[in-house]
Image 1 (cartoon, protein in one colour):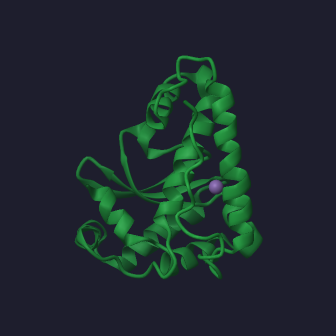
Image 2 (cartoon, rainbow, N blue to C red):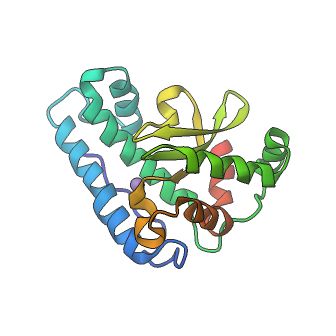
Length: 197
Ligand code: MN
């Protein structure tokens, strides 16, 4: 059973002008799809074929010989998760249970935004900014390249992709402007709340 490319949960032009249809054509249609295709080639005929994506990530994370499998599997998971973290007319202050947790953990929504932006802006090279649950604690983290909280026993609540392919067509080198636009206009707080479980 192959790993599938998850459906994009909105039309490719739905996040414009903050993330253009052109970016999603490449980011979802080329980059994300290529990770899926590469992963299926890497696991074909191995003991990982038929496992869930999460099982593949956790297994491959422990084995340096499976770095290629880990990178592609984690990127498949991270992208499927990232698409669900976004929605048209999203963003702004959080709603629901996560709002109180954010205030308790970071002091205020503004402080949370500052820390999340800082994580994304200071991730050197490619990677991801995250809001995670570490035990019962809400934390902001960043991971390089394909790395993912799942490989470190943490539960992802929210992510922003800071690979150049996520923003370069729309913002060129201005990663902080992309982070600001996503946080103000696209975060799907319903999804973040659902991840709290
Ligand atoms: Mn990406």
